[in-house]
Image 1: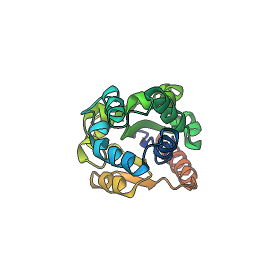
Image 2: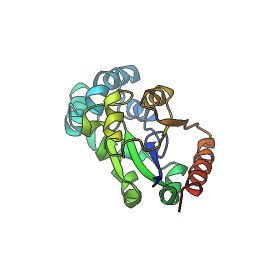
Image 3: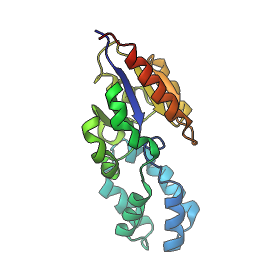
Amino acid sequence: MQEKVNLVLDIAGVIATNYSPIFWKNLSTQFNVPHDKLLEFKKEFRHDLWTGKIGEGRYWYLLTKRFPTIDIEYARNSLLSMIKPLPALDHIPRWSIYATIHLVSNHRREWLNHIIEPIQNHINSITISSEVGFSKPNNEIFVRVANQISQGARILFIDDQEKNLNAAKILGWSTILADKNGEWIRETENLLVSSFKRMPR
């Protein structure tokens, strides 16, 4: 019997906001730290942070070791406050009627819990780079997602970056670019509903 479409959603930039670059500008202003130096730090540790080679606590420690004036509690609270739901998040309960939903993200679970928890019951799997050791567009993180889906099942992947979509296409996934105006939401809705209606009963 034909299965529902497997809808794979990126998190940051699709169902939740990205925290950069406002976060770093805010820290620079608040603690009188050169903005360019903060961006150098971000670039230096980005891969290790996203792939779990360093934990969240270690990340904050390294930040304040390099910039002693920065208050960790303020920085963390500021970061979390900037990761907010996007309109697509509200569509997930409805979309779960028509599709099996999976989340994938280059991120930290600690920074996404407040986004994920309200929709947890509608999600089939969650793959976060810091937990699996690979980040998009590395092929391995897409393989991890695919391993949680029936072989040969239809997969539709939504991301806000072309390079990630291109990596998914290599595996045969259908893709939609999450544009900033949110036009992708209607396109996705229409596709899911029409696919569901065509399923044999």
